[in-house]
Image 1 (cartoon, helix red, strand yellow):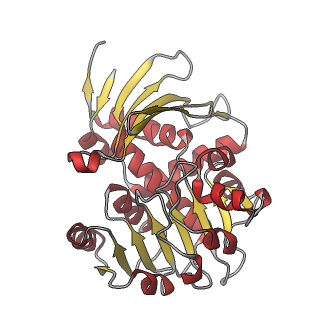
Image 2: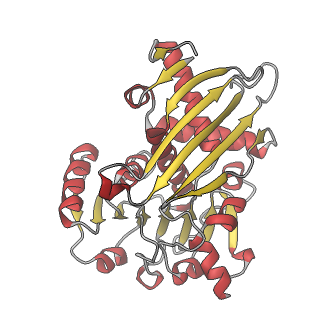
Length: 330
């Protein structure tokens, strides 16, 4: 079995390629060729343990894409930041979809962060205005960085304003991302004023209460909300949801876990029909993305196992081709 470390994954996975891999996997899902059971969630102390399996089969005997089978084990402990550790730890087991044989064990924290950013970027391709360049990013952690890296692959970034709870951490994040993306990245002096000028707003925080308010969004703004994944937690207020054309990664995930959506539903501010589409429907063209230049759009993501499988399969294929990774015998 091949073991792929974070360094191995960094050498074989680029944001643009993962975005395309996710798009291909979503097409397979639209053709009925993917099986993605609901993820299992087990509370553990002040955190949660998640198990996320997925499988797909190619489109035909001569199909170019390989089969796919795998599962991710991931933990989320909000208190880890105080412990000096990441809030998310994950490991991915990739298997042969025909025989079930284990093929690879992949470091899953990097994989999770990159595929989450790639999903948001794929949604932005369909939902953000083509000229969207001014970004406000709530969050200055690992996921916030991947959101910006992946957005840079699909929109013409002109500048980023960062909003973070810790001023020093936000400044360090802004400086590092500015160097990496080669665009102006600054810490926002006034978060709500920055949002009023933003074309895209990224919410990638651990907050359980709103950091983004719908009254501040300008016409045509797009929102990517990825931080909250519990029914009682949200990063955007009810007015954001009410104003927006809402697209989710999956209906099942959003209606089971996304407090950003569930809380407005419980309040009666919106109905179930307010969720306009899931991401696979935008990719397939069965539901529309942005309607006009003034429409406000929202992509709400809680994470989906098919995204992990797509990224893992891409990494494994490239690592094998390039002789990257460590072989182990179990």
